[in-house]
Length: 392
Image 1: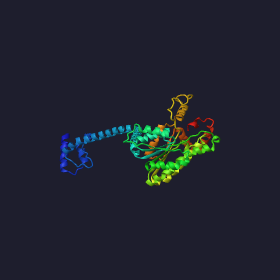
Image 2 (image 1 turned 180 degrees about the horizontal axis):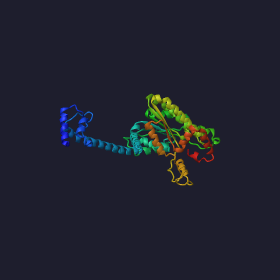
Image 3 (image 1 turned 45 degrees about the vertical axis):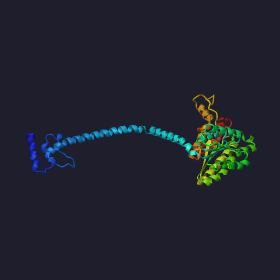
Image 4 (image 1 turned 90 degrees about the vertical axis):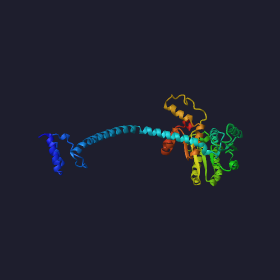
């Protein structure tokens, strides 16, 4: 029997027996070539006439082709997605660095508006750090009250600030003679400072006196003088200005301290003791006045190096060696401009505590907290060679 006849008979059987199963009809019509059989529909497909079944062949073929393409695309997507996953960490670092840079630029741009019209008192304004702070805050439109021990130096600073300044954008600073070594005059000085503008928004305690000497060679009078300048003076001034801040429910007191207020090194007994006392006082003050909306900040820095860093800090150290790196880090210290910029940032952001130091003092602080006996041994061994202690 020919294949066409079989196909016709299958069609007749389909019309006469619609209930005949699909597998039976397929076995009759496609028994000679089952590989080309297209009579098996999907589960949800209804039984269709042969003409309709033939029409579905291209759709089934196209569906299988699309499925293959979809799988290819999914494979390609997996490959393309695996490539960025390798670069996720560098990308995050770049994004974080960009955000941090933009944040600093925005904060620096906003610093002028943040201090504008605010009354800012700077002690020891004629020093390197005080002068840098006065210039930055004066350009920002702050109402400055500059304090110092020399009237001539205060007038010179006044002239340098007002000569090139725009009177419409800045305010002429007020000058006040302030000497922390004369504690008997502190009450009058506090009244004069408050009377300049009637209130104080920011107090920057920048005065400091250093001393390097063995303990047995320091007299009691010298100890008292250092304590007056580094501790009793700033604390007395803060106490005198504090009532005006409490009454207004706002204010900011900033202490420019030292790393030696948190870490004592040999041959700095009086200086470290005064800085420890000031650090403890302002830490206690921070907790007491927080309920009044008053901020208290401390900046602990290494020694201030007003000179430009030399090409080689240690002539005996080979360039690129570890000794050269350590000597360079110890010798360069903190420049007055860098410290002044940090002070202005702290005033704007109201950070409670700032540590401005190179890695070696930072490591020493951790050793002091975690392994005190080890640090004490290192300091005792370094007394004979006090080069490292000199730079703290």
